Image 1 (cartoon, rainbow, N blue to C red):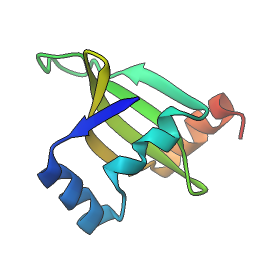
Image 2 (image 1 turned 30 degrees about the vertical axis):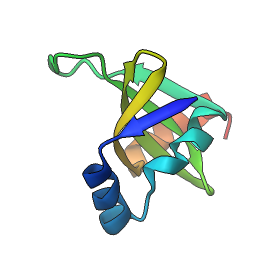
Image 3 (image 1 turned 120 degrees about the vertical axis):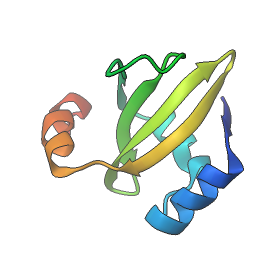
Image 4 (image 1 turned 135 degrees about the vertical axis):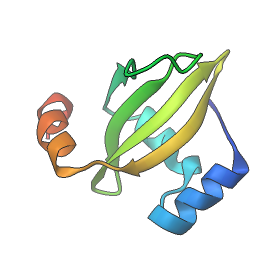
Length: 91
């Protein structure tokens, strides 16, 4: 699976959240739940992917670009998201 990202956004996530876009592949390759982000027109299709990374639920925002997934955001899931998504992940 090809994962792309903006190096500056990756560096910001590493510095502020201690999350590495490179680790997104572990979430994509394991049990996850995806939903399209349709809150507004972003000019491209945006997907929110919920899954587990090192025993913590994370949310990855990405957009499909051909065969690649272009990651633009990665953060820890908040309490509300965890309560809602955990049953869908079987945890």
